[in-house]
Image 1 (cartoon, rainbow, N blue to C red):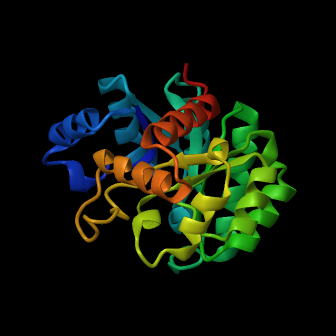
Image 2: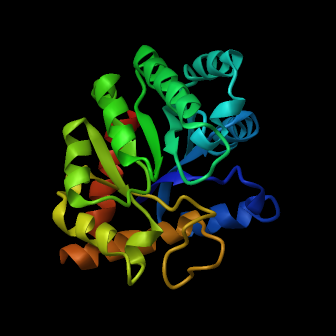
Length: 255
C-alpha cells in the first residue's frame, strides 16, 4: 500500500472529477493521503475532505508565498484546528525566494511563528523550500525544530543537505521529479539515503512524474515515484511502498 504524503486534492483542478481521481488512487494501491491546506480557503477544503474520506488526513499551515496575508487570527485558527484527530502536521510552511509576493523578512517571521506553534501543539512540520535552503536550515536550527521534526517536501537539494536535514529529525520526501531523466540530485538522494528516511508524494496537481509530465498530476501516480526509487536502489517496488508507508504512519502518528 502507498502513502502519498503531499496532495492538493483541495485545488480547483480537481473540482470536476474528484471522485474519479480518488477511485483511481484506491485502485493504484494508495491507502493514505495527506491533503495540504496553506491558506484560509484550502485549509477549509482540506478539513472537509478529512471528514468525507476515511483515508484522507490533513496538514494545515500558511504558505510562504502568501506570508504577507497571514494575520494573528489566522495562526490562532490553525491552532484551534490542530487538535482535530485527522490533522497530522502543520504546513506547508517555509521560505520561497522564487516568487516575489511576500518580503523575505515577513516570510521568515511567519515561518518562525509556525514552528513555535508546531512545538506547542506537538505536531511535525512540512517544509516548502524554493531557492532558500540555507535560510531554512538556519531557522530550523535556531528554532530547535528538531523537537517536532517533519518533512522536507518535494526535496530537490543535494545528498549533503538531505543528511543535514535528517540530523535535524526530518524525513526526505521525493516526488515526480525523481522520475525525470535530467533530475540528477533527486536520483542521487534516492540512491544514497536509507529507505527509513524517505517518503513519497505527488504534490498533485503539480510536478507530474514521467511519462505524464505536462499533464495534471494525481495521487495514483505516486506509484511511479515508488517504482523509480525501487529501480534506482535495485530493490523491489513492494519494499519501497511498505517502508515509505511505515515511515509516514510513524511520523504522523497513524496506526
